[in-house]
Image 1 (spheres, helix red, strand yellow):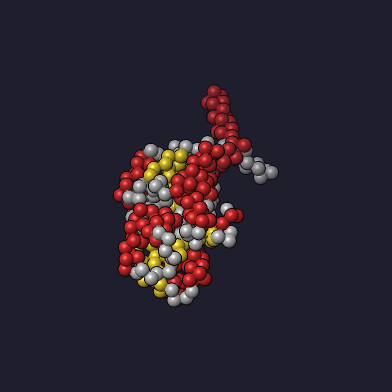
Image 2 (image 1 turned 90 degrees about the vertical axis):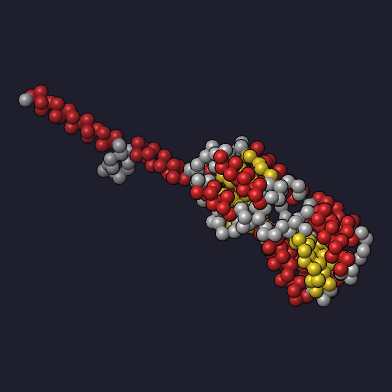
Length: 323
C-alpha cells in the first residue's frame, strides 16, 4: 500500500509540473515563457506564405522599353533584398502567359507578380495560383474579376485625360484626330481609352480608333492606313510611346501632333526634338521595385494596401528637361 501511495503521489506531481510548464496562468496574470513562445510561433505560422520564398514575375512583354525598365527595377530590388526572382516573358501572348504562370506555380513560388497581357484572359491562371495559397500582386495592369492581394498601377485614366487636354490646347476644339489603341482586353488599353474619350468625345472629332497592340511597327503601319483615309487629321493619341513613335515614322514630317504614354527614353528624345508633342510619364522602375517590396511584406505575413497608385505627369517641351 505504501509503495502504491508513493507511486500515486509521484504521478500526480509529474502531471502538475506538466501543466505549469505548458503555461498555466500565475497569480500575477503573466503566462510562462513556454506559452509566449508557442503563441509567437502560431502567429508566425498564421501569417506565413506557402512556397520556397521565391517570387515569380510574369511580364507581358520584354519587347517594350517600359516593361524592360519595370523588370530591371524589380530585379534590382530583389538583389538588394536577397530574394530569388524568376522572370518569364509572355511575348504579348495570353496563352503563353497562362503556361508561364503554371510553370512558375510548379516552381513552388511564394508570390506571383503578374503584368497581364490580357486582364480577362489571365484571370483563370491567377485564380489557380491563389487556390494553391500563392499571394498575387498585379502590376501596371489589373486582373479582372479576381481579388488579388495588391494592385500597383499608374492612374491611366488621368494620364490619358492630360494628354487629350493638351491636344485640344494645341489643335483647338473640333479638330480631327486619330487614336492608336493598345492590346485588346488589357486594362491599360481600356483605361487610357476611357481617359482620352472623356475629353475627345466632347472637344475633338475622333475619325479613327484602331489597335496597334502597343507595338512600334504596327503603330507605323496602322497610322499609314489611317492617313490614307484621313489625310486631314491634326493629331493622334497613342496608348503607348512605342505606337506613338511608329506613328511619327508614318507621319514623316507632316504637321500632325503626336501624343504618347510611358515617357520612354526614345519618347523623351522625340519630345525634345519636336517630333512628339507630349508623353505621359510613369515610373516603371518604381513599380517593379514596389512590387518586390510588397511581395516581401506578404511573405512576412504583413498587411499591405490593396491598391497602390503611382502618380503620372504630362511631359511636354516646356518641362522635358526636368526629366
